[in-house]
Image (tube, rainbow, N blue to C red):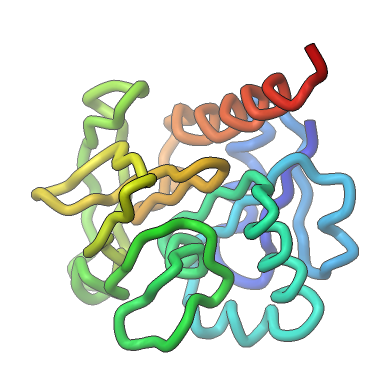
Length: 195
């Protein structure tokens, strides 16, 4: 299995290390051509506006095509903003793919960053999560499953082949979230195999 990490900005190395830690081949993706042959893609944290500007053109269009076609994607923090169908204060999605509305920087400024333990469905009540200027989900569509909440706000969700998180699992030593994404890809691949 080969999983890419969108390498325009953010914690790219940390995601690559986490993916390799769960036993998959991982590569940095900076162009549309690098998307060929991947089984999944991580859209990391960073600055969503900067990332969308850096992805303009063929890469952004390729991401939209993959997302709308059901390609497995996992967005963390800014990556969640990119994958949301609606972003408060912005017209239209950047990439889209998951029926949620997000509020950027909802957890506060950089100085308000914090680490906590989350109760994540299927992973346990003690998953470490780092929140840095994190977006929160303010609306969840009917087909979206909320996997974790913090102070009542949805901070991790899944719809079909799209997984998103407000926090940065790559900044901890705990690999359960990355393993869950890889397991999701494996499960989807098995479903796609002829009976």
